Image 1 (cartoon, rainbow, N blue to C red):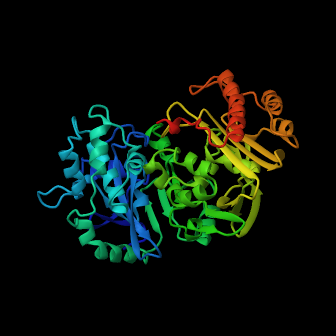
Image 2: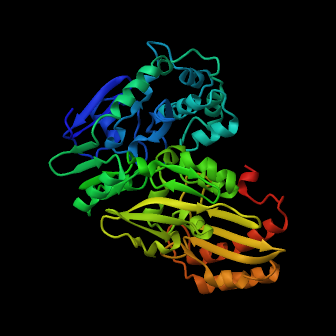
Length: 485
């Protein structure tokens, strides 16, 4: 194999691609070059799930396979390197439908059928991980798939059908063969792809990444592409040089020690969420509202921070927790607080050729509480209008440490320091909350946009302080929308 190639399995067939535009998405590759038209294009932004496919990749020290659903419409074709790509065409064996397809038929889960392949693939990925999923697990797995005509009851019923005693499918039969082939891919050179004008490179380690960025400091970094790809699919932009972080081994690490969590910048949400959920329940719950399962299977913490969006969901929580991050350029490494990373709208302290290496999140100590509130127009798979993060440390009901951060209230995610001062070293009371609400008007002058007006943003931010107070006064009170869904 030449160096300028990307190699992967399409079902059980080894595929090598070269001399192709790296801006090509997996969806367009499947439909326009492989003529696998079962995978549909709906929104071209990762919202509707019609384009859902499944990726099998190595896990557990390359001794096992992990099956995950992704949005083909916002995944670049270079990201397939070293993996197995499975589409709806690959599920049935001969004339016999796969279990998840047959369950959809038996439960009358399809009318027009346009969305059906995406639902089937999401259900397939779920059953590969859990052959007896609960209703909650089914709802979470299907949250990124939209249907406009069938209605969800029959689709949910189909996904609930246990596959525990189902006949072994072709993927189980070829499991060891697939595992062997994906391990063989790991011996290949770093993935490269280019046509005459555009290039893609996926370094395997930090040294290769640092050198590549020094050589091309204006290259665009891509991890999950869950936001970046929209510039191609929605804005019709073309990215000249892409450098992928997905194969950099040092950026894929997770560490859980006594003091903190250390999360590599290219670790997908779906991999690090469980350990954060155990430590900070509301953080885990909030992450499950960041996009869909397909988005969280590809999207990364480093990407959410590096994007520098004022409405990114993770930065306010990280700022409130006092999280830190390491940045690297060449051999030089520095550590900064997450709150110091943002300097202006879509502007950060990153230097040319510098990248985010990992993020350090402190663990909770006795008396410390993290409260998170995401305000959006729908509960799942939506962008925040306001995100509030309240970190308060109590000593006998006195707030001895307060860190409050908001997204959506300014050009960057930032702390509300006047609000913090109104609460610090005081008992939490209706009077101190009222003072903190007033102080918010000194911290922020929010803007109006398509998601919310400036007046709404300020009012909801003030109301969230009140909500936090009420929840802390009665820890068993049910105030969240999800409590009644």
